[in-house]
Structures are given as C-alpha cells and as structure tokens.
Image 1 (cartoon, rainbow, N blue to C red):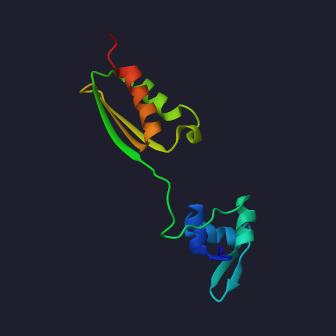
Image 2: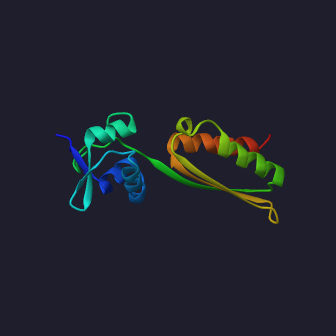
Image 3: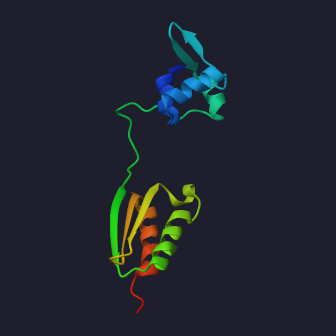
Length: 143
C-alpha cells in the first residue's frame, strides 16, 4: 500500500527539490500540509494535486529495475579553429528539446593556442551516440 503521508524531506526527494524550497511552498500555502508537533506532513492527495498528477508507485529495495546504461565520453579533436568550435558547441547545446535528446550532459572546451577541442559527454547510450555523430559530422575525415 502506498504511503499516505510524507515528511518535507520525503517530498523534496520525490520532487527533486531542496528541502528549503518545499518548506517555502508550505509556508506560502502553495502546498497543503499539516503541522504535527514541529514537523509538517503532506498528504499524498495534496502532493498529487500540487504536482498535477499521480505519484509514481514507490519501489522497495528489492523491486526489479529496468536495465540502464550510461556512457562517459571524452573526445579530443586537434586542428579545430574557433569557428568550427563555435558551430559544434552550438549544435551540441541546442539540438532538439532536452526530452527528445534523452539524458545527457555536454561540455565543450576549445584551446585556441593548440587548436584543440575537447568534448565531454555523459549520458544514455543513444543520446551519446547521436551527439558523437554530430561531432564526427563537423570534425571527421572529409574524404
């Protein structure tokens, strides 16, 4: 049976927010809560109303998880001028909406003195492969 009352800490974990942010929502009246002693408790239905949808069912430590793979990739490309570095940075930063690209974090650093570009990608395999394809399209062999 799903939990019916949540502490402020649990709400913060569920929503991916800081505890102080959740407390502010309660104080401002944006999130309904009941004060019990010195702590607030939030009812499940109030939390679902606040988020605009049902909460995901809680998983125990023994619940099966879907397989997930993540890649950490560092690509170094030599002989890259500033214009190419700028094009690549823009392409990797703004291509598609984040929800379409999957989960990935990208950093691009250009060293103009060495004409060297470093791209760091951390994310799911499909997104990483797509982003590596973009790097290859702008910097790969043009034979």
